[in-house]
Image (cartoon, rainbow, N blue to C red; front, side, top):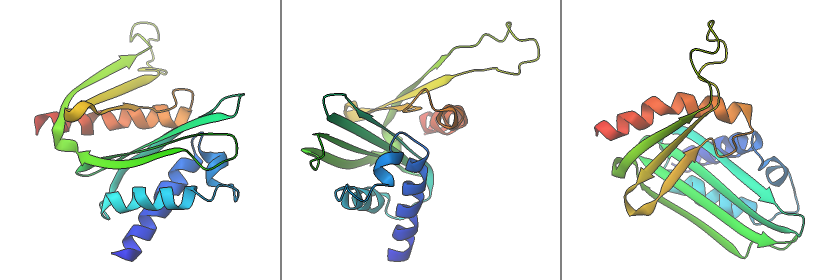
Length: 166
């Protein structure tokens, strides 16, 4: 199981390199990131990852906040960090809940099927939001400006709609 969890941690880390977390993932200055990644990997219990994504925002004043969202075959996992300056985060959390507790799924799309007769850009930028019991909400993509994230959100829609069917 330990080997599987190490592989899961590597997969999560690789996925986050493609997001606004990339400067944290590749930094040697952020000692808190390794234990944070371990917490996320442990919460997967070695299950296959469906998606691992996130967003990290840093303000000019030095405050920062980051979110990681992971779906496995049966769980949703969320990790959050917040802090100021180069100090370790003052707030961190990592928790999991069952995907089966899904309440509803909503979709926002930006492109009309009637604009482009060849459907080259259709459906355009899609944002998928899943709400779960307990007040948990996951939105994909985490970073709407990331092209890879937008494609992943569209591909995730059938899985989330399948969760509704129970």
